[in-house]
Image 1 (cartoon, rainbow, N blue to C red):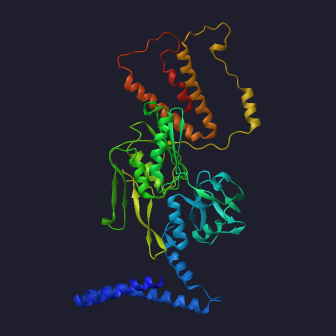
Image 2 (image 1 turned 135 degrees about the vertical axis):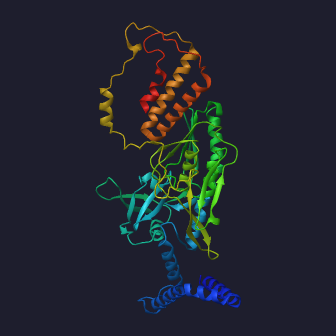
Image 3 (image 1 turned 30 degrees about the vertical axis):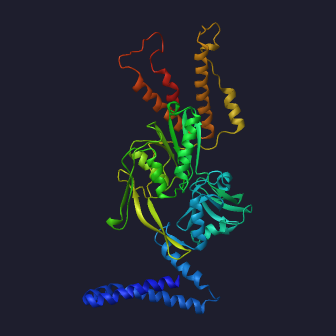
Length: 474
């Protein structure tokens, strides 16, 4: 690190010599402006030497300088910082898809460690850590006053070892402890499933594998659903996705857009601004889309949600996102260390900066608190009393073909499956219902001739009752 600083200062001095030969007055002006900087650097040198000679214990020079650099960077914003050799190696490992720890993305807010999002199927997620939680203690030791890197180091340890973190959560009157075992975190970046005729793509992070895995999982799910013609639409689940690589967010957005701007970044000077546009090709082939977000959706997740929302390509459902609208560049400064520096803000296609504001969903849907207890559920079930026409004595039958009956039974099973999904994941069930409604509207607009008028044959006929189920879910 010292060699690097000297090389930098050497470059400045060499440049000053050439300037003297070419333009003395300009050098005088520049020297006047730089004088306070050199005075502050001299102050730093004096303090550094005072610590080396007079501190109660002999400090490690390398650690002292790295701490000073990190302090300088973290004073700028919560996302800038110094990456030591170990931290730099860990970061490179994480962008490739596996690392050790609790499986939790954290930031620092007013000196406190705040959870951005737990990662799916990790010790933190399984123990019940939630976005917005504050971690105050690790194994009884306070994190107050530590840097973010120091706090993260305290949470690291051998795989399989137990750790207890103390959580401060909004809505809870007292802090509480969560105990879990550290584990090797292998990120499953994209998972797919089919709910009814909707394809659900759960994206947990944006690393080097995200786009390729998304393509593979999408194709697999479409095949499982019986082909693209059978698919009503796609749910892109970005909840609790803390972000990651910008290029991967651009690729995922481009996967569902045929044209237009995806995102732009604006740096300190105009020539540092960049803009990325979509290329032709939509993996969803124009099918309706819903994007799910919540308070744990940050950075790259917000880029994707913002791009699809601004282009009216998807309906955004859920809760307001985290609001991290800045871009960090990792710049190596030695062979094994780097700095992470905020270099730009990003803007959605409509020109929105979501820094500190987040992506506002088109449809606000909060995830309900835990379901009623077994006793409450049993009481509610016993009090319900459902009857239909078929239950009435002497009711007329309905002679439908076996094929039609099987179709009706399949449709009923799909509706029941979505209803059951509400108990497991209300927001996802809502997204599936939105897709079903969009598909129904599209079907009627495309395939029902305008000249056809439903015949009113009896009470309730032709009143749009086929949509009653969807209306009840709203």
